[in-house]
Every structure is written in C-alpha cells, then in structure tokens.
Length: 284
Image (cartoon, rainbow, N blue to C red; front, side):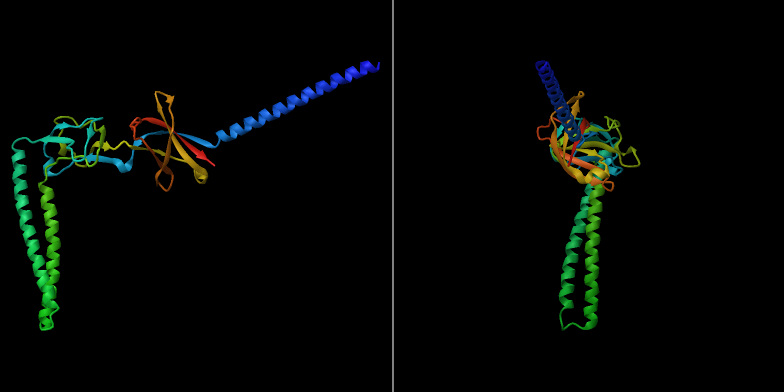
C-alpha cells in the first residue's frame, strides 16, 4: 500500500514539475514577444519619394526678354551630364532676329562703356569736392556748394552703375547655362525643338539640373514624437524590393516644423531622384 501511494505521489510531483516548467516557458516567450513588439513600435515607417538636394539643384526658367525671342534648336535630355558653364538650351533666331540681337548688343555695350567713363569722371569730381569741402580757406558758402556737389556725384555713381546693369541685361541673348556640375533630372514636356521660349506670360520651369551626390526625402512626423527622434534611415524601394538603407540627417524644417527634409549621401549614384522609398524614423 505504501509503495502504491509513494509511486502515485512521484507521478503527481513529476506532473507538477512539468506544468511548472511549461508555465515558465510560456511566460518567458510572452515577455520576449512583448519586447519584440515594443521594439517594433519604436520605429516609424513612412513612405516617401526621393528628391534631389535643394541646395544642389538648379532650375532653368523660360524668359520674356528680347533675347529669348527665338525657337529651340537643341537642348539637354534627362540623364545628360553637364559641367558648370555648359549651355543647356540652344536657340535659333528667325527673320534676321539674330542680327538684330547682335546690333542691340553692340549698342548696349557702347552705352555701357560711356556710362563707365561717366562713372570715373564722377568719382574724380567727388574726390575734388570732398577735398575742397575740408579746406579752411574756402568760404562757408563755397564749402556747402561743394558738399552738395559731392552728394550729387555719389548719386550719379549709383545711377550710372544701375544703368550699366540694365543695359547689359537687356542686350544679353537667352543662353541658359548650367550653374553646377551635375545631371539633367527633368525636362518639361513643352521643351521640344521649335519651342518658342518667350511664348508664356509667366516664367515656366523648363529643366532641372542636380548634383546627385546628395539626395533628400520630405516626411511628416507627428509632433508628439518629435522629441523622441534618434535617427533616420532611408530604404529605396525599387521593383518593390527592400534594399539596404542609408543613414540620413536633417536637412531643413519647413511649414512650422510640420515637414522634415532628411538628406543622405549618394556618392556612388546608385539611387535616383523620384524613386519610392521608406524612411525609418528611430525613436527613443
């Protein structure tokens, strides 16, 4: 009888130990799941579109100046590499317009040279007036007269400089050039051979050039999470496949901090503007 009871007790103890071990395992697994779920909640995943860096992008606009009164002969296409100073849109002029522009340019340059000579003469007058105005031997009336002459000479300087800028600007043909080393990333659908540059009353963005060594994405992060941000990474989504992410940094804030622009390096040129991406915002 005692052996039966002892054997039965052993079985009960073994079952109890097995249940305890199972409970411990379940509790540990539940805690692990909770931790993993908590860590997942610490990353915000935001869909965005990759853009060129705002500080490394040039936009080429249409113009209503007399120098733009021609039609497009050729232009750079998307993907073309350009160097600073390269012409990106070439115009041809019709009905003698090119000769008219050249004549206008010569007249404006001659006028500018005349204004430059006037500027030098005004500088001489101003120097003489200042010198006489400080000479004690000159009568007070004469000093006042020379003082007013100096003020007028300074005003003439400014007017001459402004006239030179205007004269040279009006005479310049429309020959847009790249201001940075980079690549053409977009061309307006209206920009074709034969397109009349001066056809639009308001400026039109014809082309965009960018240095692709740095790219940006613009995201919106809830205000309640702003103080918890630890870092950013950008995951390009090409062909719906997740690719290795790139660490990013804040480039600028806009719209009263509703939008955040984050920039990341792209020195290898593997990532292109206008690609879809997932931005992962790591929170504390």
